[in-house]
Image (tube, rainbow, N blue to C red; front, side, top):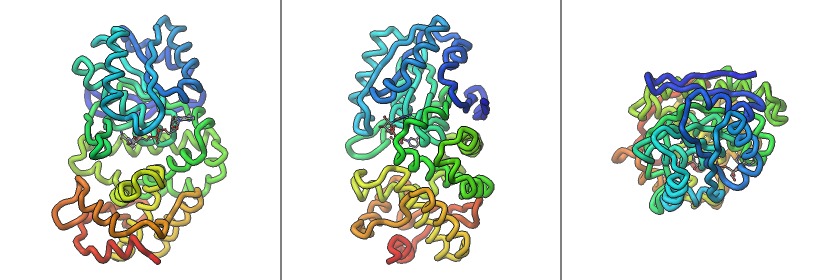
Length: 360
Ligand SMILES: NC(=O)c1ccc[n+]([C@@H]2O[C@H](COP(=O)([O-])OP(=O)(O)OC[C@H]3O[C@@H](n4cnc5c(N)ncnc54)[C@H](O)[C@@H]3O)[C@@H](O)[C@H]2O)c1
């Protein structure tokens, strides 16, 4: 089975292929582009698991696979390591007709995209995402970037890949906590755009947790369809794309306030979605029943729903106020109106936000 989704962006359009055990077919697909050279960017853990499958498939097609490995971790998503990668691919003689293949999660994908967008004024890149978060979110849409000591993802570009090649089989080796964190983003797509996806997540919980290929294929394809539709209409976050921030306004503030050490990104988003749903209920936009469904679904996947009591609400509020998306005196939130529909609202009443943050 291979599902295909297209991101429509004129001459920069690209396909997303989603299938099971398709890593070994990557070489055949890449050959069609006629790249002069290719280099794989990965980390030791992912390369150990899947590197051979990818290099073999390239070599079967007569493509020499150059490899660049960077250490595993968010802390290496920074300019020093970008400089290291430039050096390696210069030595490997990648030129304007070459491509970089990102084999890994969002960290590798973001760095590979950033390098590809700046190396020799831009070369091709291909996403081969291996975490659920990368398969449903970061590999699609063309946001690339690295962190700066002063802020996460502050240095970056918009640069679309030529192809996204998603093998759902790679999720079998993903640590469970990382997998569950990725589900938070899928729940987000359900709430913002697709009540059928939301219901599917309610009824196929066991299939999801057992990593059934058909179930994963469906939810990843649907998530990519939703994201690609939004990105096609608003590539650079001029308006509509902001709906993808549901759960993220508060999620980011939670990550900052807790120094990125307590929650994985998806876990912070899960709490953020619940708080924003509570805010929506406080404003009378959604009823108790829909709020309860969102809460139960997040809970049923073992994701956190509430801030632990030692997290200081005041710190989260001030971190939101300092956020690059805050507009003087008011905070903008993506709020559910019912499952599958959201609206963007500016809120000036600090008390109502504080109350939603702290239900105790
Ligand atoms: N560009 C975007 O639009 C966008 C969107 C969301 C997040 N992001 C970025 O994505 C990053 C987070 O991505 P992530 O959650 O994928 O984290 P990650 O890339 O750090 O991967 C998580 C862990 O899983 C390991 N791993 C990856 N695939 C594996 C597999 N198949 N089997 C076993 N282990 C595997 C990795 O080595 C790592 O230790 C952040 O830097 C975030 O800023 C970008």
